[in-house]
Image 1: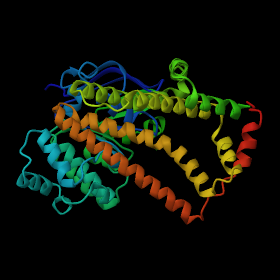
Image 2: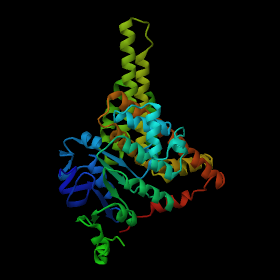
Image 3: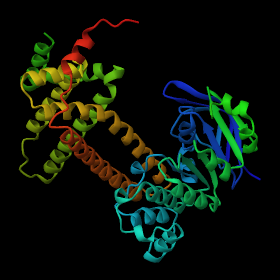
Image 4: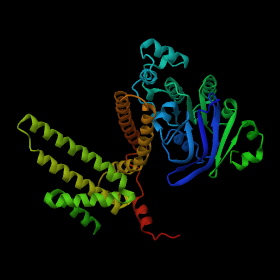
Length: 230
Length: 202
């Protein structure tokens, strides 16, 4: 099966400091990969790099195309949800947010389609609201919905549960479990990573490791300690 | 001494002959753009004033083409130049004085504590605005990838509007924070300035 995301001997920077060197992994369609690591280990920078916003060395391909050569293609194929929802919800109402994404994916942005799409995420009661009037959990849901509305092949999630309560986290997890796209999930919430992902990429101290089975990582106290995960 | 120099620069920006002011301004802008600490500010200011200048030139060209009685665009262009030179004086001021020194000066000329506190908070908020602006720009580029120009423009306009709303909200929140703690935070400015004057030890 063709990889929709492939990194080979990847190194990337934050400012002038090398964050990670020698990262290699592949993600097949539908794969869910957790990106784990302590604060400042490079999880967010990896997501930015996949979107072509940060420089890198080595190979990084999204759907077979090198990101540095075709950054716009990478952004078209991969939709990202970053931590700060306020900088990503741009339209005057939730309806407009979803309609814009659906239109971008060349679906008809008429009333019924947007409503039907919003219904899949339980967002119909919020359609007329301004994004700034929403709770943190509602903003997350809208962000996720608008990202999926673009029909990306890869969904990049950066701390999607960071400001959610327990119920909100559970609902988001259930929602993500239904998503057919490849998911790259950067998180500190290990229960979410364990529940959703089979594979893990661990970053720390400028190095990286890939665990084909995420349970092997969490069953190894020495590894958890070495990567400063616990 | 530094204040006198700054006043001299400002007087020159407002009064000097444009034949001398223009090359001096270009040289100053190039010098500040070459310094890492002031580069982003100078580029931002150059963009804003450059836009003014471009619009003036465009209006002048249109009026000329239509043979209308054109206003004195030369005068407006000169005002833009003086405005840009004054902006560079402010940039020079931020390089020559620390924030504590500027606030101490404002305090000495009896600027109200509320304004001092607001200036202090907003200067510190600038870095937050810069971070949010770059995150917003990434969101626009990410969502706009592969779209046609009108859609990308629509996204950019909404993002700019959202950012303005956010800036106003931030200002209002700061106003409320200050009010909640009395009319001013009573910043320990003298202490800060004294600390800045201490020799730095390793």
